[in-house]
Amino acid sequence: MVKAKNIPAIAGGKPVRDSYLHFGVPDVREEDIKRVVGVLKSKWITTGPETFEFEKKLKKLCGAKYVHAVNSCTAALHLALVVSKIGPGDEVITSPMTFASAVNVIVQVRAIPVFVDVDAETGNIDVSQIEKKITRRTRAIIITHLYGRPCEMGEILKIAKKHKLVVISDAAHALGAKYHGKSVGSIGDFTAFSFYVTKNITTGEGGALTTNRQEWSDLIEIYKLHGLSRDAWKRYHEKSIKYYTLTVPGYKYNLADMNAALGNSQLERFGKMQERREAIWDIYDRSLSDLALAIPQKVDKNIVHAKHIYSILLNLDKLKVSRDKIREALALENIGTSVHFISLHLQPFYKKLLGCKPSDFPNALYLSERLISLPLSQNFSDNDVADVIAAVKKVVKYFSK
Ligand SMILES: *Cc1c(COP(=O)(O)O)cnc(C)c1O
Image (cartoon, rainbow, N blue to C red; front, top):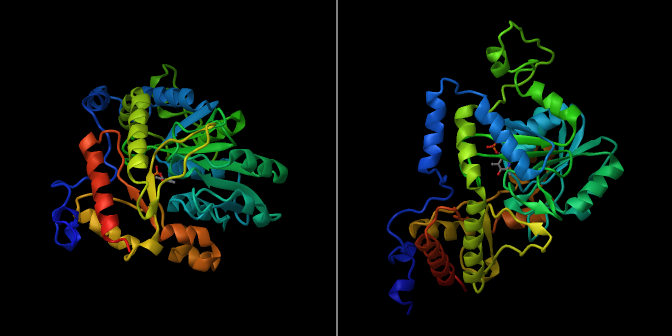
């Protein structure tokens, strides 16, 4: 007989907590609200001083020569392809274990995405499989530092140099991550960050694109705001009358000060936020090791993981039910979870475009059926963390063979 307290809510027991713990609630505090309200009262709410300060702060944090704040990570990735002139017929190597927009942007510039399978444990691109996918038409590689763990950048940069490829990092998960002493944001040709609500820091909606090359930075400056030669802040604040000149058909990708103010306020406590995330990560590591699941692989000592998503990998051979049943059971315990990601090669659009089968990328397929992202936020109390652990233990043990 299973003891009453060990019966999950899905099987008629009592849930571990009474209120629902949401996955990915933003950490917005009183000081953040004050700073945003300050912008609203200032009469200048679009791109201006808060955005410029945000760029400066990010530059310091990630060590890039040039940082451009934009209104999403998706916009940043698109700009990277536009300014490096990747277009029709070009091939771009990428991995399918990422968010849709990291690959959609390749299609949007009418280039061709070429998937490379991922490492079965980390979910990052399997560097040993990159070179066999390179052709005469390969121009770039977009990699995702999944969950905040930097990809094998040493190998990737070597391959890129040999084949003259542009290296674009999707660092939506990886603000604060480091690889062999270098910050993510300063490695390779371009790095795109996201400040969407669920990310380590948020601006509501927002992103940034970094590069170390001035010529690219100059192009980003123009393309991010319609293709105009001078931005609105400058035009409205110069005494002499000046007109903008249009040189290219650019995009509307600038970040507003309302959003940047939230980012600035969040960055003030970034160090503390990351410490708390690490502490929670360590508690999860210590508490979830004896179950029918794998916890995230440890990083080497020359790597700093940004601790964005704590993703467990279910051992389905030892479980009586599927991943989705476990997620459902956790939801009934009042624990919200997510999945990062269902591999893009399984999505109808890419299946059709590339004619791929599920078994073409076996590791991505394997992970897609087994991963669960546990909730992790710097503003979780110790009780919240204990509830997540209690729920996972109860549910996984109950459904173990
Ligand atoms: C969130 C996310 C994005 C998109 O970020 P936006 O700022 O919403 O455009 C891109 N890639 C990955 C890996 C993400 O997790």
